[in-house]
Length: 538
Image 1: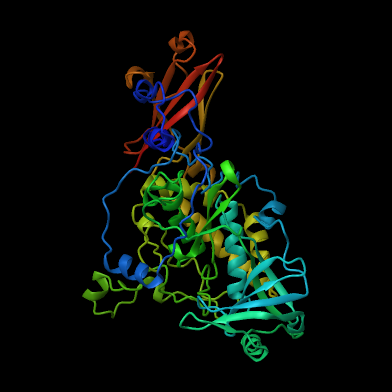
Image 2 (image 1 turned 120 degrees about the horizontal axis):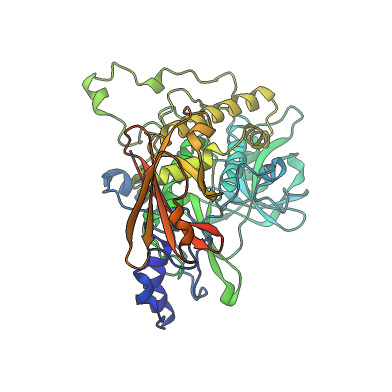
């Protein structure tokens, strides 16, 4: 069981220049008094910011052509329950308990842009038409438009993607649908437009008109845009999906071993967010002086669902890497035997959807556009952790978030909601077969109780379990077997154990199965507190 304290014990003395009494003594213990950690401890404040940059072409080439399947490693930065504590990367949210209002609001606290809007710069990076505006309050927004071929598609994807990612626990910007008349957009005298070669030029009224001419219009002549509120001004650049930041004293876990980044592969597969690269992230420094901390954000979701930002998504995206598209089976058949995804139906009659379907979706083989270091190292335990979040989304929440895309055709909302529910269930069925999906462990009236998520969500019929109890000697990390039974009754001898004692129970299915869950409890007064969970995979 790999814990977050292990990294901190090694790093804190070096960072702070002090020695901690008892570090050696406690390091032999499996569990510490504060286990399980609910939040990652943070150390020294930010002293210097080195603004990072990622060369998109190099990142693509390096990961595409130097790709190789890594040796599986354990995830780091998790607590003794195998969960990711709250941190500047991730916040645990009770997804199933989120109200509809909270799901629809997400990270959005400032509200969308208020008219009139002042255009201060044109956006040239990326593939979507866009620019930057300041609204009547002086707030800065990054604005993007839909492709003429697919009105509503990309703008809705950006808004929906940010809301789903926020609900799942990640940091995202505030994204809004903005519908306004062209005359509401005033041109700043200092507005600039960056050329292809990186030079700034004055943005003229005629050039702005050309930008607006490429934006699809509503029936009443208004333009529909996606406006993303600028993140806090202390920008530190994007993060990479491998290594750590040298200027962030709290960034102790290599990114490719972070469970919250590895698990994104499952969440992105659900949303079909294939442009999963470091360039679509942003680190900021928030707070001041000793309270200053790096905060890590995900952004740019316009290529999610059926959208590829400037066009409908290529059906191959999500199925094969861009540079490594030819599988051995297709080479063997000379390409005459089409893959399943090449024969599915896409709703071409609904331009706002793009190419999005649950047909031929395999959660175990879904791929981003090119290899992502964290995704490549994802284990079944990482995937299970994120799959729990995906299946927790209820129909009402999914539909409410899709409605925030503000589609004119209610049939589009119905279709995307159905597809997301089908993909959600496919994820649950696939990853819950890899790990025994038991959760909610507690001892009540001398009985161990828990929930089988596969049964709860209807992926599996009711099961019978076999339990093996033991006393856990925390100092020596050894167990003393006590009893094996087909029931969950606490052995009678455990009642006489002193406060602070540890017990454990290994749970397997009644029939032969390699999957198991071992849980650990600490005796606290009259109660038993869950302090550890260890899982084996299929």
